[in-house]
Length: 459
Image 1 (cartoon, rainbow, N blue to C red):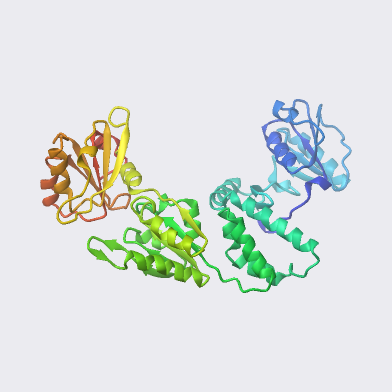
Image 2 (cartoon, rainbow, N blue to C red):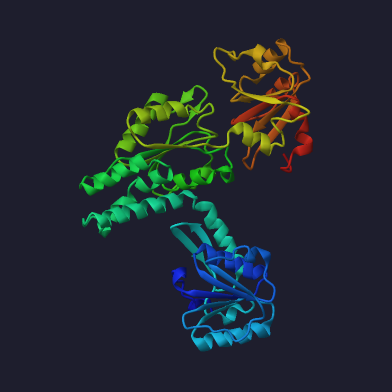
């Protein structure tokens, strides 16, 4: 049956719509029609107050039983009563007059149906199974809603304005070649990123016959590892990149989301092992963008939290290259959540502090006195090697040796493990086990909630 359905778009202002029925189903249809600027007549013995409140130039309501209505050819009649005989009678009247019928009680008897709509005006995406399986229609609509950001409305309006402008100046630049080059350029994504000025420069370059090769860079936070924690914008930019420079903490599952033809370069850093110096990374981002490529800088966690993201985009900005920054869920938030350890809690901690635990000359150069506060959670990034020193220094500067501590290994990943103890016991515990980076350390009484709030079984 569904093979016979033809999706079309009509101008609702050019047709008359009749809704027979005044209940919940009718209300949904009326709201859809009013939003499309249709002229609507509602007929029912009892009409929902929400429908009556919309009455005006677009909507006329008659609280009476539907009779031999004067339908005309080209009208659209929606039958939304719970009385099959009424719906059948009105359907016969409508079709005899040349009107089209939508029966909400009998989808198989429909001349037309209402699709699910993703509205990014002027862009509208309609999804329909012809009434065969509304549940699938809703599922697909929800998926598309998630992956088509609201800013597509902004892009649509920008393109519409550009089309009208080009049509008005009498030029021939509106032909297909121009639009293909424009849509293949970085301009659409720059509009989505609210960088219309950069997009307009590309337009002017194309109109003047220039080859527009300016690239763009995306600084994207990949989160702590679980791909389900990516933002929608991060996923969209990952999937449209030409070349990627990625760190050690970017999980294989996230790398698997890259396009097959995306060129990949590992530039990760481990302790005392930097695959590529930071300055060279910065320059390579610039060089690739100058070739007109979409350059993805993919970093674990959030690029602005101990990620040197600021240094990288500073060089991009100095080179005049358009860029976007997409935050990621930082390890502190992701790992603590997956371990069932709230970073703040009214009974345990009213503040949280993030520090890095890198060792230098055998010591951790941290402001120890500032870290010793009751009712505070201390989160230490990259502190596995220096953990014995960290525990010793915290105790030496006044933190009780019974203070709970958690070491989260491979947080948010399928093989995550959570190791708990106290400042006094954790060094010996770590020494006797094979624990691997990436790890995150949490110190404070909130760690005591782990056993109760741990929602990932077996960890």
